[in-house]
Length: 456
Image 1 (cartoon, rainbow, N blue to C red):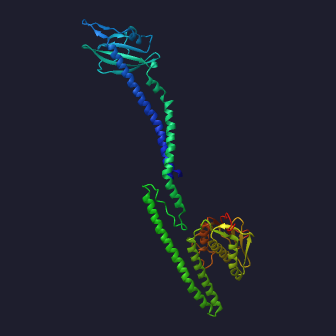
Image 2: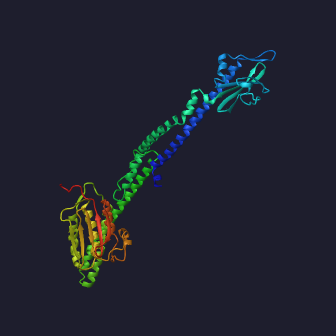
Image 3: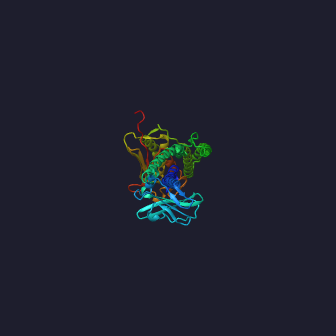
């Protein structure tokens, strides 16, 4: 579940879960609260009705009870009206008065309770909700029972409770969705500096050690981490600079002793020994040249306006390497595009990359065969030889620095192809290797074509 690696998606996912939970719990909580309030109102209304009836209940000195309800009150509790009922009970359970036939009680009441109690009861198709309220009349306590038919609830709050979940509750969901959208925008705004810093961090590499993460708009919780990363990048850049300068300086310093050594070897006057020694000197000179190339490729930065004419670069490489190839009985040629091919990049760096490919091809092709440099109009260069080729399982390894295989000659450092890949990557291109048409290997470089040729 790679999406969990995103802070924004993680926050949104957790917030969606919270919104869904609130969307379920909030309507239920409101429904419970409204229902409880409605019940309280019903209970209070029943108690008030019991108090009203108690006003008209009297006990004569001889112990007889009378109930003088006004006609409009009697009508409220009549069977014809059908909404309310009442009964008045003694401590013993005897019914003094009742709105039902045969003076029946409304509920089987535990008359020993000294505070109001509430009941629900089904009578036929009617569901009654009622209260039994203890009331003091003179020195005697009676229990006044009041009931209401739930099918005839006429309190406004009852309608609200009945309609809340199927209608009113759905208003909450759009509100929460709007809140989710607002939160998404808020999350995006808060995390935007982090996203920008993450994008910039992806561009930091050996060629762009000058880049630093922005600290100005960073959240306070992340600012110390960003500052620490920038400090580490400062130290890393200083280390890269020191390493490149040391490598380049050492290589340059070695060139003079090698030149002196070569002159002294050539003056020995012994052809066989001289030839072997000169081969070793040339190998050391090649290693020094590759060390310089490594230092320069590590420091390579391609600017937006850099342009190079690929066909001319390849022609210069072939012109330089032709004497070497001819001396070994090998041929070299430039083929392909006959018109200028402009690519985005640094001409000197591309020259070094193609030169290394051509040097490798000359070393590994057989005498009497041809090294071919094919320039494509689409910004590609393919250098092919007719050697032994490269096994498939080694085609990724050969681009690693200092990697060597049995096919490499003595004195090879394993740096040439690493330099090529480093330069091509700095140009935003790619380099790969495949089998030749008949035998050998083909190294192909793909580069981005320039939008406009210089001077166009």
